Image (cartoon, rainbow, N blue to C red; front, side):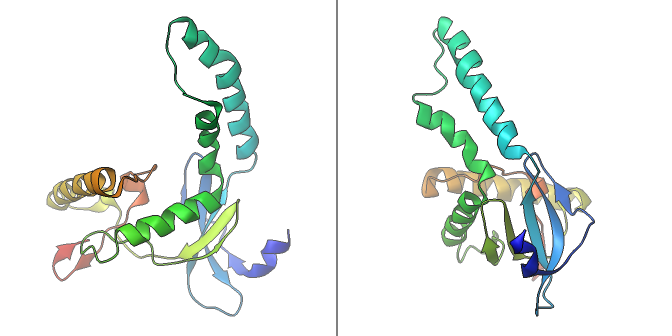
Length: 178
């Protein structure tokens, strides 16, 4: 569509792919900076809508026969659509950035330069993935990510909903792993 004019180049190689979106390296017009484009998979909104319809009309009534109430209201059920609106993810990113500002070991991606409901563009971050770390560094990362999770849960009262090693990169800085 019209948004394609925003990009100089989008690499066809996929950096990563998850259940709702995939990422590509991209470059913007008149900017030689390397960015990451996260874009929703085609038809993901209709897939989610179908799943929610099935839950609302089949799963929830069936479970209610056994006295199990999964959702206290229809609004709670509709919140399942939040992950497929990348504006919501952008708002969550801003909150995580604020929550971890000044934290010496946890750094959130520097900048999202453009956000729409179906894609966003963020700065490209260099780093090492979890699976390529040494055994000792993996152990340290597990301890730090556990601390991070508890910090999000108990202090910030806001937890990253896709908190796994595939969404993290690690850097060595002053002989410490970040």
